[in-house]
Length: 237
Image (cartoon, rainbow, N blue to C red; front, side):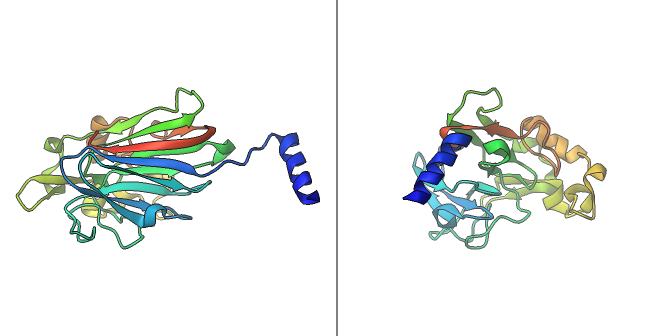
């Protein structure tokens, strides 16, 4: 009881509030079934993968301080969510240099704020949007969305489905693994890494998205919970 009283007094004096986990909702507005991949350095929500039929949605929670959080859509998978045409990853693992649209999160970070973005650093496979909820009103805490016209994808960067349609567009990094496009640290320091003619293709399509390794100035969004932030991720919405 004495410890509880001391903790309560400290919380009162320093204005700190203990919040709960963060609610997420994922919605599939695509015309096909997708499997949703999840990953984080300190937590892998929903077991790392779940199935969503068209117009279906599912929720999960992310822990406080979720680090390197990723959510993405996998297409053309078998009945167990494996052998996917796009977005394949090891069980409970993260994607690796594949053409996939990523929703990325770092929750409860600097000054308690959440940071989120849409990343095309590895490429694009599905339109996606991120809508924050339960947050303090702030101009930088807003919906972020990205769609992409496969017609502008360089021919050698395109990935095709079984019927010959384009299902993904690789980035220059995932297509070539060339250090000048991937900027692997520490081989290529930040001051020597620059956008390329290929990353500019993605930037013109989705101006707010990450399109190369250090493209954070106009790409990061941040929110503060009021009291607990949540996020809605919609594919093809």
